[in-house]
Length: 97
Image 1 (spheres, rainbow, N blue to C red):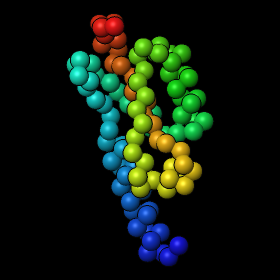
Image 2 (image 1 turned 30 degrees about the vertical axis):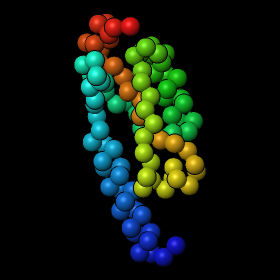
Image 3 (image 1 turned 90 degrees about the vertical axis):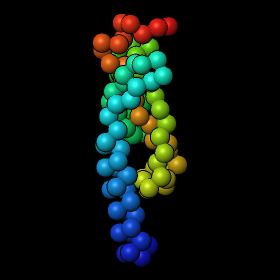
Image 4 (image 1 turned 135 degrees about the vertical axis):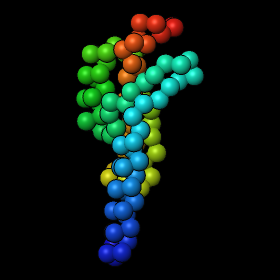
């Protein structure tokens, strides 16, 4: 790969990771606030997910597939990237089923 393409790819990946780092919380359509606890894939993701379920309970976890455009490690491996969201503690007890 030519050096200019490598630099462009590196810059795109760095920008993409900076953008991902800005994603910290979201509010769903029911007004529940969720905090992002993890971003990634593979066995590391599965380990985090398992532990989050054990600690917070499956009903307090949400997994979201994310766009991995610009992140060569995901594109080359064919793996998808995910975010793990945790329902904020103050809302866990009042969440409607």
